[in-house]
Image (cartoon, rainbow, N blue to C red; front, side, top):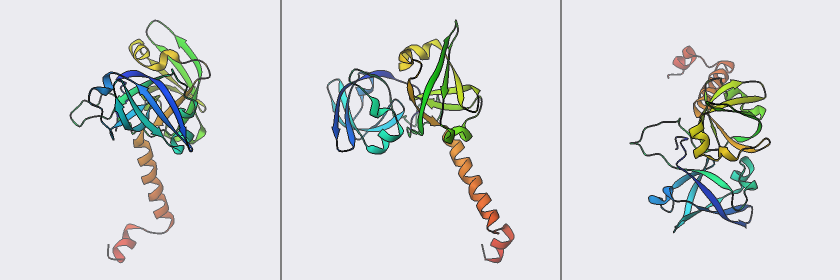
Length: 214
């Protein structure tokens, strides 16, 4: 579990294909202070397991499912990436609860800079539209952000200058693809409502449950 608050920007140093997966070697500094083999680390929002930790680097194995749902298959040597270690139970939750499970990839449609913030408009697949709400949380490239505006095809983020500087957002361009993870609370609410509707449609009511001894 993560918070969506980026700790540092790392760099892809090596990409080694094996089968339908990729072994990625990432250079870093801060996250290496206590990172161990088998620890979780978020790379551009995707939760990965450290399989090797060395002097100034760590390595992960991105499997086929990760490559399908994220931008990892487009990684290049030298690319900058957002890094965050798994949260501790004692730390403040400054962002929002982020699982590191990428739902899909969005695309940057427009970037507007002004004196107080950057406005970034991102298109999203129809499949996640039901989970998006204005002023609600979303994780973009591992960064916890708030949806400022929402339309049927795009959402707009208002990014403060500090966040812009300490993340890979400085490298975003029109057409850039970004990893998206919706607020997990919306998924659970949908699941519960669906189960309730299915129960109603099946004729299973409270009174019927009592008759069955529940």
